[in-house]
Length: 169
Image 1 (cartoon, rainbow, N blue to C red):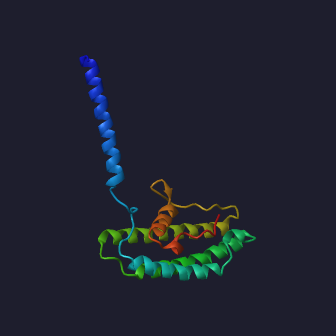
Image 2 (tube, rainbow, N blue to C red):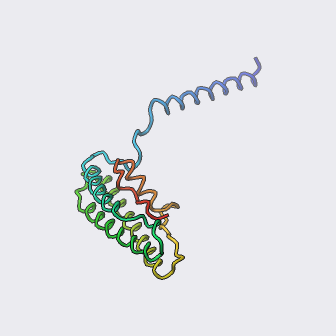
Image 3 (cartoon, helix red, strand yellow):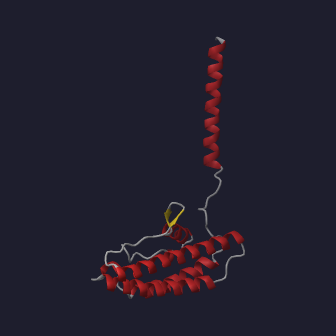
């Protein structure tokens, strides 16, 4: 076998071994089995789910904003919904945080994102009163709507009633 052929076969064998090693590592030694932002201590998520379930029950009593007949009615429903959501956030903010400071920071950021989202809703309700053609704009966070990380955090921590409401289209 010539030097060139021997070198090519050694490099090919080395490439195959590297690929097998990388796949073996990825399959048998994954870096993490949980989603980022998942809270280990279930005390906060369980308490938060109860708070959000109570708020969801209150929200269910109101019509969906997109079902209203006029922009003024839509603004009124959104304003009532925002009062319920703000009270929910105040109750969530009062819940004790986990001892893990990283989890506490994630919770604080999640609640701050929620407050931003409710502020966007309040702006929309005010805009509807002034302009019947007003549009709902959601604040951007890391090139996405702020509602996406809110929903991601709530879903991965099994706080299913803590996702953003679907009352505005």
